[in-house]
Every structure is written in structure tokens, then in C-alpha cells.
Amino acid sequence: MKLDVVKVGGAILEDEAALAAMLARFASLQGARVLVHGGGRSATALASRLGVETRMAEGRRITDAPMLEIVTMVYGGLVNKRAVAALQALGINALGLTGADLGYMRGHRRPAGKIDYGFVGDVDSVDISKLESLIASGVVPVLAPLVYDGSGGLLNTNADTIASKAAVAFAGRFEVCLTFCFEAPGVLADPSDKGSVIPHITPSIFESFKAEGIISGGMIPKLDNAFDALRAGVKQVRITDIAGIGSDGGTLVTLE
Ligand code: ADP
Image 1 (cartoon, rainbow, N blue to C red):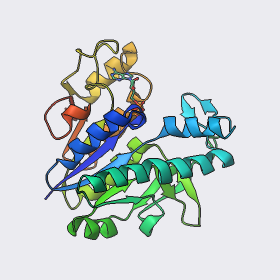
Image 2 (cartoon, protein in one colour; image 1 turned 180 degrees about the vertical axis):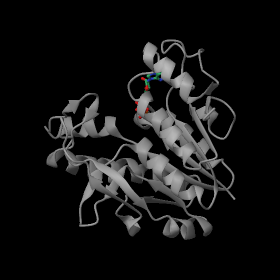
Image 3 (cartoon, rainbow, N blue to C red; image 1 turned 135 degrees about the vertical axis):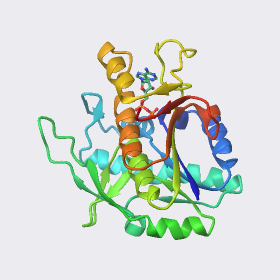
Image 4 (tube, helix red, strand yellow; image 1 turned 30 degrees about the horizontal axis):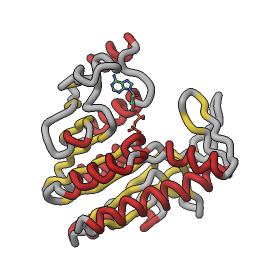
């Protein structure tokens, strides 16, 4: 059986009309599906309203104790429940979950290296058996980027990683199509030109574009997650804008 895992990224979550369009597109997919969301920009906005400083290192958020409270509120609360409510209005029986809900995704705190990223989790295990029975009864899981540490704590985890790990776990049971949906129409050969979508990307094309600086920032871990998912049995990975969800648009990621 086919399963669509769709991850929706930062800029779309921030834009009410874009989010509504994305959720409508997601709701129109046929068959079993899972939605995964990020929310970093909303967390930064709430932190600033609460007077909590957002600290970044090498482009990534440092999740200290006050920031863990904020990402828990924003990812597990505001962003997740808004998406669930909007999907319910579209007739989709959505259920929002963090890794602690049903204990479905566990991780451990990443040991501090040169930089201590704080309460950031690396995923250890995904127990999809509980999600599978929900999916079988028509429920659509909406996954927030928070993992459970097994001893009462939540940890902040990159949403692309959550999507990739969940897709891999489902790949044992389903033919999984993983779609990373963001604001651009795909991976671009010229980041300033939306018409320059690369229709097909492999690890060797990725390495040369990365070396040239054409692929940078958040696109690097996104593609790393995409290749990891394919190597671990996910059938298809696509990086696209809203219009590409459930279609053959955007960038198809393959191993060769
Ligand atoms: P998300 O929007 O899913 O949260 P990220 O911000 O982590 O994702 O990663 C996507 C970002 O990668 C884009 O917003 C864009 O700025 C950046 N990027 C870097 N290189 C490219 C490229 N060649 N094509 C498209 N986007 C790119």
C-alpha cells in the first residue's frame, strides 16, 4: 500500500494563504498520508515577543531551557493544532503528535561538541506500529518536530529529519513517497531564479552543486535527509512547492 509523507517547511507555515493552499492540496491526496511540519520562524517570533533571545550557531538554533519551552509551545501547540484544526475543517481526521505522544519517536540529547546545541535530539527509534493502526482506521497523523527522550523530556529535532526517519520506519510496511514541500518550486540551479528547477538530482550532482555554493544552507541537510531516506528503503523523494504535492513537479531525488 502507498503512503505519502509530506513535510511542510518554514516560509509556508508563516503565510496563512500558502498554508491553507498547502493543506487543501494535502487533503486532496488519495490514500494513507502523514504530515510533518517545522516551525522555526514562528518559534523565533514568539521568543522575541516573550523577550527570550534566539541564539544560532552555524545557521542552527541553540535550544537552551527557555527555548525548549518555546519550541514545545510552538511546535507541539500552536503550529500543530492549527494544522490539525484546518485539516479537520477539510474533512481530514487529523491527529497531532510529538514524539512523546504514544511514545512513537524516541531520541537522545546530542552530546555537546565544539558547539552545545542544547536540548536537541537525535532520533534513536520510531515505533510506527501505533501510528499504523491509527492510519488503518482513517486517521492522518500530523507530526511535530519534537522527540521524546524516554525519561519525561522533549527534545527539539529538525523537521526534515523527523520526516525522513518516519518515512524510513513506514517503508517496512508501505510504499512510501516522501515530499519536502517549501516555498521554491524545487532545488534550483540558480537560487535567484525560480525558473531554474533541477528536475532530477543525484548524490554526485549534489556534491558538485554544493562545492560550487549553488546548494547551501537548509538545502544541504534536506538533501542529506532525502538520500538517507532512499538508502533506507523509501520509494520516492521529491522536493517541491505546493503545486508539486502529489504531482510529478519539482525535483525528483534519486540515488543514481
Ligand atoms: P524549510 O523551508 O523546509 O524549513 P530550509 O529553510 O531548511 O527549509 O531549507 C530550504 C532553503 O534552502 C530555502 O529556503 C533556500 O533559501 C535554501 N537553498 C539553498 N540552496 C538552494 C537551492 N539551490 N535551491 C533551492 N533552495 C536553496
